[in-house]
Image (tube, rainbow, N blue to C red; front, side, top):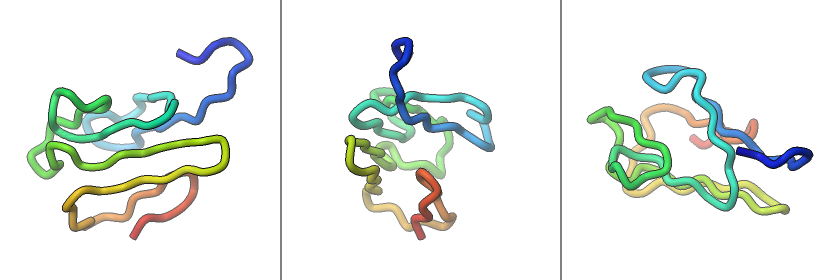
Length: 81
């Protein structure tokens, strides 16, 4: 949870099983099927460690591991194709 007055970027699920859920991004978040991920997506089409989203004061970035992206991902208004 963000502290009062603290600005923190949010990752917001916009479809699927997690639709509407929100996660503050401080440092980085790992997304995947594995229960050790910060965001767990229980879907066989999602890799165990699917992607990492990172944020610093200067930039946002994301990395996918061995994933052939069949769909386009949008992070902070930027498209990952």
